Image (cartoon, rainbow, N blue to C red; front, side, top):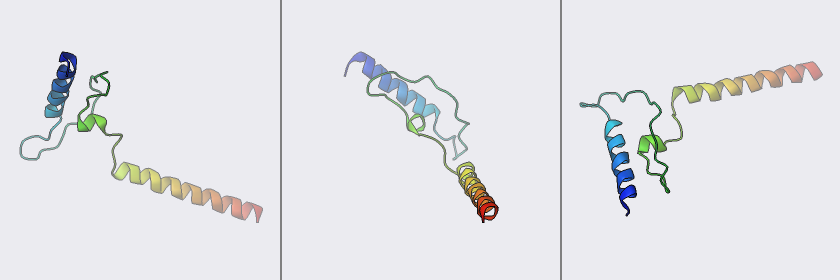
Amino acid sequence: MSSSQVADVRGAEARAARQQEGSGGGSISPMHADTHTDASPAVETPAEGRQGFLGMPVLAVLVGSLLLAGIAWLIVHYAVG
């Protein structure tokens, strides 16, 4: 490994340490933009490598879109039929 790669790995490890849970299993602070490495391949922490968040907001969007599609289908069904 070159010295720049070692520095990137150390930087990623330092960011990962800051992104860990608080003592006693406390909550993690909200995500915010971090400085990222431009190494190839990228050296990222697990939190930085995550594509997005799952949970209730994603479920609400999926259920809401399904309901809107159903309403649109009913409108078209009764308007044409």
